[in-house]
Length: 437
Image (cartoon, one colour):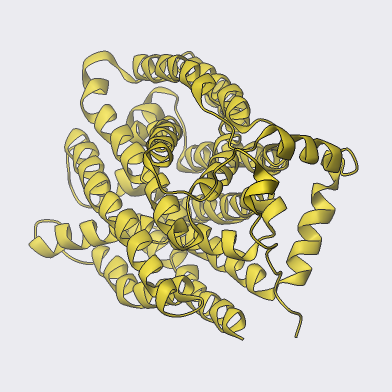
């Protein structure tokens, strides 16, 4: 069996001179909080279109398939492909400035979403919004990997991914509150303007690589052109079966989560809720359950990692074995029962609880000099083959079941599209076994 990649030995102080990586101090926490705020904005911008699903489908005369294309392939194709090069750039350049350029670009295009008048115009804006957003996470996780100790990586990644539940929840709350007052177009204008303002603060963020290390990177990358990223990724994957299984498990997990794109329509059309009530409920549940899931996942995964090798991966196996039955039950129980809201809360936890363990495990397996590049590659796979295909699958299935006059077509489509999540469990288990050997 091929041996997994071995990480380089930890650099000595003389190698880094004045830089202080892997120190959990006040400065590291400030950086973590700030990057998390940016990630909140990232997810709020990305998911605001889902928060306004009913309004935008009505005003722009979109079909279910067109809407899922806008939230899936139209956005993620550019987001993920460009993201791979952004990850390679993050391993080569000043990362805070790279993030600043990305945020300015995606925020301007978020504002431009408010001017869209049809599917084609909205698709073009969404396409290039993805280019800007691709710059954030690979560079941010690379920065955090140098700021926090190895045994705290799941906590740092899990905290950073609070951006998912808070940002997505905020998008639904904005749609249900501010959207009712000023309309969906003006909400995109406001959110885009906020991102442009936050760009200024990134120029105050220090790059932890000191001058000596940056010079070494420049000399090294002069021999490694940017297009060599494909060769580097291929070599890393060939050297580590555990890394391949981790990425496959992440793709299957995110595919199932992509099936939730029609949940607003499901709550209104098949559970009888009013649109604004559904938006507010989804927002509050996702913030509460998602935040708890993200923090709990990072903390408990680090605890298991301290007790046994590959503990973070075993945590994923255990938590999904326990939680996935609840996700299926949620689609079946009566919307007026307490069990419905309990399942909705636990389901929100299940969406975010794996982010910290997955990306911390990636940092454990990937070579140090390819940290951001492999993060970008994993995001590419999870988004393009996970979220996008999950979005597309549930859209196609829902339209097909509706055309065939099936009862509860969205429920049936979502439950069928969630099946790959079950297949992620053995992937994580096998990856853990390989790491332990």
